[in-house]
Length: 194
Image: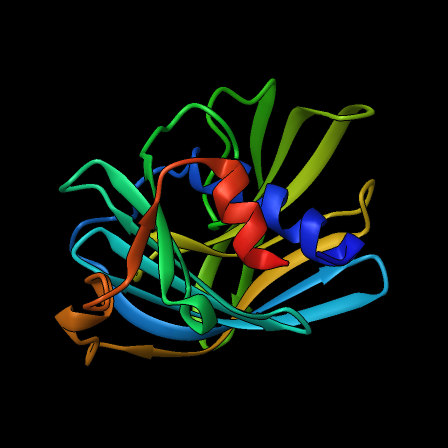
């Protein structure tokens, strides 16, 4: 596995262990753009009835993450290997899915903006990061009931939903593909990424 592949694997694994469910009535799909330093990684997100699905493509192939609060599980799927890992859904740590951090040191509304055609409330949130305190700016779309953008200048990181389309998200997107092998350990999963 390349160094970038390993970084993405552990980042995704940590993130999916820590996702808070989206608003139950929200249903939309969007392009997702992650900017980490100088690297831009595009993806897609689908949300329906509190369930979420993310798809990322990189030089290692596609990774799909499905969050099922109703089953209290997260599935991380590697389509090229027809394999997946099942993880328990937790809500105590920050994750890659846009959400307001749990237990921030400080949170305050700093304005309102229009992003991607949505009226948003902009919040400045202070959290503990790997190198001390960091400030995150988070834009929450009131109509969707979820954040649609987060940026952190200390980490030179931004995650944003673009080309948001409300409705029309198929329920089948939140199911495991038939015939995929369940992996039982992170090492087995990491081996599949090689």
